Length: 233
Image 1: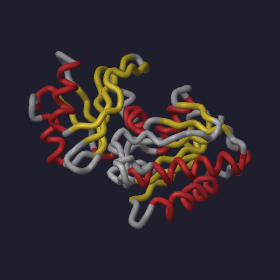
Image 2: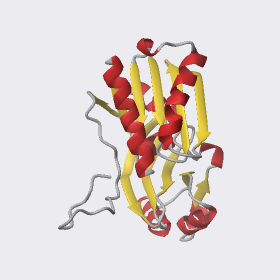
Image 3: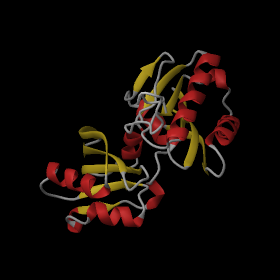
Image 4: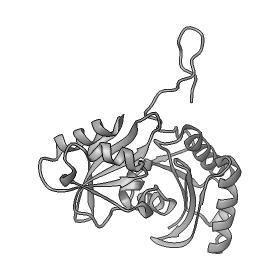
């Protein structure tokens, strides 16, 4: 199965073409302007480098968040546009689950955490064993200290592997309640890269959708209409 995958939920935008688990091409970039200016060039680049035409793709996978409001919205809109143009099935993948896939070799609890700004983190806790993954705490939002305390409350012994793009200060706050219980993964696996979005699709996880896919924001919009109603982020 040939999968075109993309993720723009963080400042690291990425696209990949994966064929039955083999990465044919992948490109990542640190977003310097806007995701909308860079994601389609990334898609064109990986298709060309993989030697695969868009009509030869069997699935399109996209990270649906949580993460940057603008980034997630642009990534999902781009994937929908490709789906509409080609008719290729579209699969939405939690960016936290894609992030956890980077820790595939870990046995035990994995805490996937992404910077949500404002002193908060998006996070989810998973249990990994023998290649299988179980969700312990679904996508949530909280201060790093609260996220760390919730993880410890669910895992009474053993090490908890933390993977994600939190700053050193936020990581220190997350692990402060018991630093001996946390193992922080290196920054090279800190982003939900497109190859892991593709892996989630290949593994049969994610939401197979006919184009009605919606971003997973977790946090509500700050913009309000008269009367206090939220503006869709």
